[in-house]
Image (cartoon, rainbow, N blue to C red; front, top):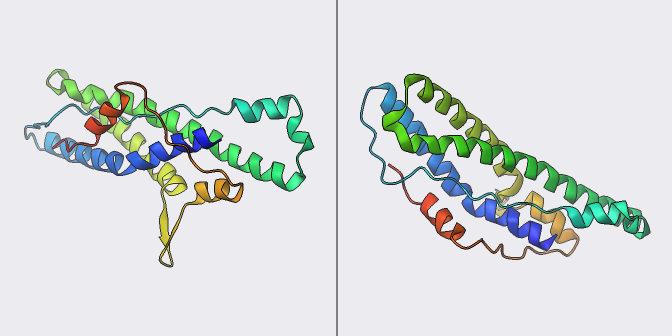
Length: 181
């Protein structure tokens, strides 16, 4: 669970880069619609969406280890894992959208139909970010940073382990976070 929270934290860390890149792509689409040239400072690239592993919880349920937990504790773990399942589904969808958006790097070969499809993928990535970000990114409430997802984990005494990127992946994340326009 601590490793999974590290995966979630990696998504939190990339949220500002995702927001900026989506804004930059929106600007590029507006430039294209006006017939203006689009000059990118680098490739569109994509965020890194590490895998959330839920096999420990699934094993605890399957072998009935969880049945030995007090009901309140089991329900709190179940709620946290339900959140992880939801987040895994949404980040898989985000990853699919970004996999299409990197086609933007070949803009000199794009047809008008391609541009239309890419606008749809950008809209999809934007809609998913709007769903995911409030779920995992801290919001300020009465001067205090509230982290809904991490709050559940903290109640269980679980803290995120730093996610260890695969060799080369961290450089990709850093490249993704550089301005595009």
